[in-house]
Structures are given as structure tokens and as C-alpha cells.
Image (cartoon, rainbow over all chains, first blue to last red):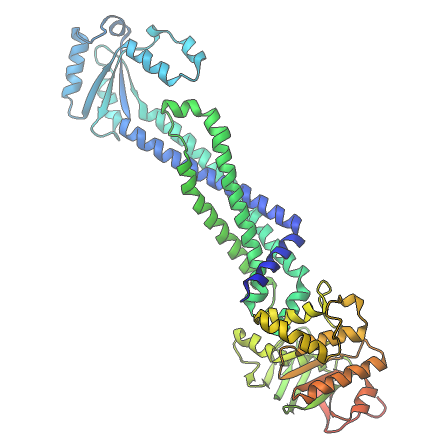
Length: 300
Length: 229
């Protein structure tokens, strides 16, 4: 097999068919960008979940009275409650946070949104116990036990909020996957069509090749490679788009959220890990589509 | 070299067989005319030899290949041992004369050194030395057919199939093409030529196999086209 011959045939084919080639590359690119985006969201969810799984807390918010008057939790109501919590076998660790500490933490989280800070005064935040559970999967038991206790204003189960957050992420992920799938179908049809058009425009060459005894590889490899090259270019562009999207969109718009630790950021490593899958998917799909098309439409 | 044994071919779209119980043997080095009216089965005959079609019944042998039954992946091997020339030349218009001839070798993976050596040789054989850089549209019909013959012969096939090679040419040019085919035949290459051209068949006095409605109606060792046809 003469590589230079096949290579020059591929280039000729892509050039001759340039509008179709561009359409094929762009569709592949969009499809793969969405697929990559979806995969990145999955990674982000996983990482964020892992972080929260470790830190998922149940907060026992104390009444206004205790919040205002018992800064060190030394008075009876608060101290009794703390003792009860600390001796509960379902609870691993108990941390007391008074109103001032709560404000400091709040300021950290909303550093990027000064308008939020203006709205909140220190006396709006309750003092609270942060509970680290022995079994983080079952926060509702704690919630039931301490909800009505003396000095307790409310029991806030962070995992409920997280579940809502994650289900929103999962929705985003599913949506990107669904659109990626639709785009993939379009890309598939375009690849198939391009291969057919390409084979048709070169039917004279192909016929001569067949007659002089060229093997199937020689006659059809150029068409197959055309599809694969276009798919590869589409994948590389998609990876470029993901990087650009991270730098110019995610890091700019969600930078504050990432910095506060509410969400785990998507970093370069994530994109690096997703990229090989995009390349492989693209090569695989374009090669298989091209091969099947040639089998079905081009006679040997 | 070529052996057809009781070969019939019925196309799916037709009720009448294109070939019916045809048995023909062509020896190595023979020059054979295949004649008959349009639709008599000449093209089907040639297509069977190339395995462009498989027979509905019977056996086809070309060189050492059992053509109808051979594995698909061996078909290129068969076709490499057969050169083909057509009425419409089938040249690639975006390639020069030399490139057209070289193409036949490139696509079967011949090394570049070989190609550089044999292409000028075969162009000289067909009388096109000095025209290797021309494009097909700059050549006359006769010259274009010479290019096609050069391309068919450059790989030194065992046999040359010519499907009405003079169909688009004037009588003088046709005569030149026939001389060329005769020359190729003298190198030991079997030549099988389908034609309508009375004068050529009559002047050459070679073996004539006549087909009519898919059947062999005549096989003369030194025949003419036929009286009243």
C-alpha cells in the first residue's frame, strides 16, 4: 500500500467536496462539544458530590435568644443541648458556630456578590451546631430527633438542598447528552452522505481502479479516511471549544462559586481526561459510518 | 486461458437469458473476435470473465481462476491479469497521459521505481512517446485509445479484453488500433475483442465467435463477419 497515494486521494476528496466537508466537520464539532460538556458536568457532579459527601452536615439552628445572648454556649439550654448531641452515637462530631462566626463564613461564600452582603446583617444569622454524622446517608433521623428540642429553632438538612442541586445538574447533563445525540444523528447522516457523494464524484476513478485489480483497501480507504479525517478535525475543534468555554465562560461567570467551594471547578485536567474519549468516539463513529456506507452503496 | 462451460446468465430484471448454455474455449495467445448484434450477450460474456457478474449456471475459468466461485478478496488478483479497453476510452481527464497509465500501477501498489521505468516503455510501444505530458482532451480519439491500451497493457496482463475499441474511431484510425492490438497479441497476450466492425473482422481473418440471442451460433477458426449482416 502506497501511503502517499492514499493520502493525496484523501486530500483531493476533501477539497473537491469542500462544502460537505465543512458541514460534516461543524456538525461533528457541535455534537462532540455537547457530549464533552455533558461528560464534564458528570465529572463536576462527581467531584462536588465527593466533597459534600465528606462534609455533608446537618445544621441545628438555635433560637434567636441563644443566638443573641450566649456567644460561647455556656448557658444551660445551649450547654445541655451540646452535651446531648455529643453523646448521641449517630453523631460523629459537633461544632458550635456563633453568630459572628456565621457572618464571617457567609462573607466568604458570597465574596463575589457584594449585593448579598449588603442585605444581611449579623443578627439575621442564627448560631448553630454543625453535626458530622456517623452515617451521612440518614440525616432524617437526626432531623426528627432534635426538631422540637428546647433551644432549637430549626434543623436544616443540607443534603436535601444538595439533592435538589444535583438533580438540577443531572438535568443539565441529560439535556446536553440528548442534544449531543440528536446532533450525532445529523453528523452520522452527513458523514454517510459525504462518503456517498465523494464515491460518486470519483466513480470513474473507482471503476478504473476496480478494473485494473486494485484491492478494496485501495479503492475505499481514501473515502473512509476522508470521513475519519473530518471526524478528527471536528473532535479537535470540539476540544478547543471546551477549553475556550472553560476559560472565557466558566472561569469568568462561575469563578466566584468555584472559589467559594460550593461547586468543584472544572479544570484543565478534566478536559484532558475527557478529550481522548471525544477523539475515540469521533474516529469510531466516522470510520464505522464510512465503512457501512461503502459496503451498502459502493460495489466492489 | 479462457474456458466457459455451459454458462447461462439471467439478469433479475429480464425474462430472457443474456447468455444461454455457452461453452467456449480460448487458448493462450489466441486472437478472437466476439461478434453479434446489440443485445446478443457480448458484454455479458466479457463481464463474466472480469467477475463483474457471476453466471446463473455453468463454470467460468480464466487463467487459473475458477471465476464464478472464487473468494471475493481474490477478485483483484484476477483483474490484475486482465487488461481492459473500452469504446469510450475511460481516461481520467484531470491526469496527463503518463499519469493515466501510471494510475493503473499505483492503485495496485507497484513501487515507484517500477512505474517510472515501465510507463515510458509502454507509451513507446503504443506510439505515444513524446506525448506523455499531454492531457487527454489534447489528443485525438485514436491517440486516446492508445493511452487506454497502454494503461491496459502496462501491467503485462495475460489477456486483453477489448469491448468495441474501434467503435468511436474512423476506419483509418481503427486500422492503426488493430495493428497495435495485433502487436500486443504477438507478445503472447491473448486478445478477445467484441466488435461490430465488419471490415476489421473480414480483413484480419482471425477466429470469430458469433453470439445471437445469448447463444453461440458460429465459431470459425479463420472467420469473416458473415454474409448479409
